[in-house]
Image 1 (cartoon, rainbow, N blue to C red):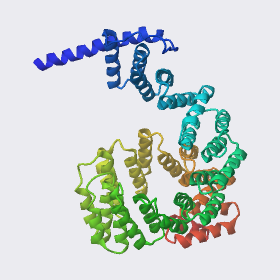
Image 2: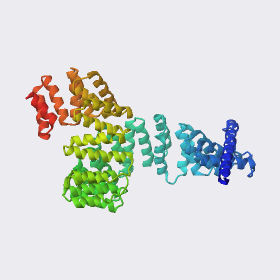
Image 3: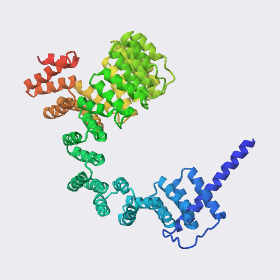
Image 4: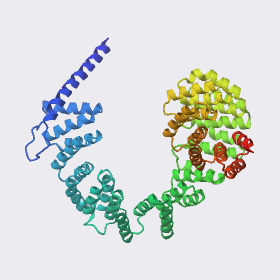
Length: 570
């Protein structure tokens, strides 16, 4: 009873404070003046009732996360008391609320009360720049740079602020003026080059980078930026640039790291691996670098090297060791070491890799012991999130399906449907299995339910449209569904294939070939090959059709759709 009375009193107090707080906001803030004169005497000189009241309101607002109102309150107090600490607090709190107007007003008060504070001047200049008021920022920035012993850092910091300026040409004009007194500063030239690039002035960008090379040809910051500029035109230009630089300066680890990343993006894994190996014990050595080398080694099939650097990454404290355990387990599997693989996987007791580790464990059990044992291993885990339960269930279906137990998989999905009634992914899987079982009515129903749950589910639209097209029914509806899917995932080669197939069914051979060729260029999938070959055949391009089928058969000799298509025309 006593606790209830106390709680009611606390709640009543909160309501009163809120009412006073809102009344204060409405009456006081509208009358605040932007101008502040630090030479006039402060209106509040002691902790009187007004000060305590406003200060408490500001603190309450801060605690409630209402930084916007708190910033206004602290600013009002700073103006009336001429207190530097309150002005600084107003600036920082307003910054947290992203209220640029109050932050700027607060910074003005702070800098006028404490004109010797470099931090106050820096923040004021930054706020002027980000608000686009470069003319007000210019004298402050010039003065700061004149006083700055580490002027180079100031220019580099200006880069990070100027990119926020909407008018890039104004930003360039600003930094050119600021940098003019420092012709021997590489950082000043870099700031101009940086702003020039974003203002689309390529000529000035390269001119400034050339000046930097004369001052300090080894400066990696400028080299990396030049590589970035060249790479935006052509990755090969960037590669050649890095190769040339590294021949002169082989110890430049930062440049070598960027070069290695570029090679990886180009899928030149052997070359990338060699570069990462040169970095792995350099000044940039880290758990992440070791992990990257291991992944490249796996990509190249060098599991001994991969294991070495996975272990090194663990020793260096890789933040997600569970990922490494999974890779080590896979490596042991390639060697046929079933027990050793399980030892690594059993170390994963929780976390984001837990479900993946249990699915991999089941796959290994299926491989070495049998599917029944694999299914039993997945049944042990019940206290899971809905998403984790779905992942394990899908793994069960996959195991049954791989064992040609489609009927059992179908029955299991039918049984579990009630437990996954809100899952679009479950309904999609169930629909695909229903189609395999010949139940196209159920398939259509499930795909439509999946789309209703997840309106942007591209693969469901595609599956529904493709099913109609493949059965040569409801072609207009098929086309609409595939168009929606393609609008959601315009670079998905499977959806492109579906669009090509429905266009073929509609008799639009040229349009069909256009989509199918685009899909085939992205992925030489056997089903895409089958479709493209069939449409080419009907376009009287017989030799081209045969060539595509023959190439695909060499890689996928057992694909049923490909074999069926080839048999139909030969």
